[in-house]
Length: 144
Image (cartoon, rainbow, N blue to C red; front, side, top):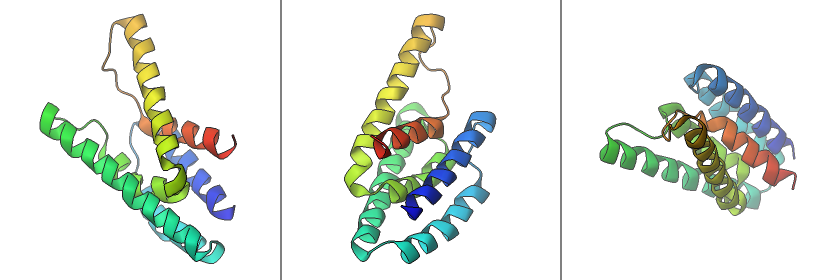
């Protein structure tokens, strides 16, 4: 539970910064790189640590795939480099068992936001800070 609280705090700070500045600072990713593993080692079992590590690798790989494919197909990345770097810590905090549900819900939120934006302003491709969407998805699935 302590690991999830620290993770939610990190994700909340990242979401607020992403909303205000449309970026995830490297310093915040660096803090997560130091703090989250220490907290996880101190307060999690080996099985939970393995699940968290698998979730981190899985999510980072998916984010990297989206980053590279959109760069290759469109010429510009769909997600920012800060989101990409945060991908591992996002998956680490959620864990492998829950990550697909959270990612699916975040994709649905993004699609719904873009659809509403398109219906109101005829803009399908308006920029969207992704970390707040991830934060909402995590909160919904952690407390559901």
